[in-house]
Length: 173
Image (cartoon, rainbow, N blue to C red; front, side):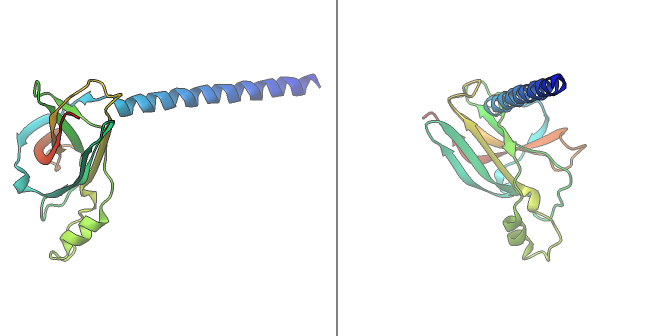
């Protein structure tokens, strides 16, 4: 009987420890979604939005959230392993801040752009989406221009970026 109590105590302690670890990981994940990170990638230039194909499909600043999504690609250019980041250039000091960015696959863009090219280029990786909880974001940035940091395989992925301004600004609420 004593043996079962010891086993029950070990199981209970393991479950409590697992719950604490899960809670800690949830807090870290939540903080990573609210903290703006300074962009530290090497910028090799800025390209006007007319040099790329793309569209900002959503650019919304509600009282509590800022959301942007769309796609961007260069016609006829095969995209290898790449890194695309959504950045915010602070109007006050010009610093670049990296928003938490997702790269959703865009088969609709791939289909649309490949109609005239015979399916030679895979544009599925052209999507981007970013959102930010403005009440909890640190540091607070009242206004800024949105840019896409576009790594087109210029060097090892994620080492050199071209900045492309998009038709989306974060304005004061």
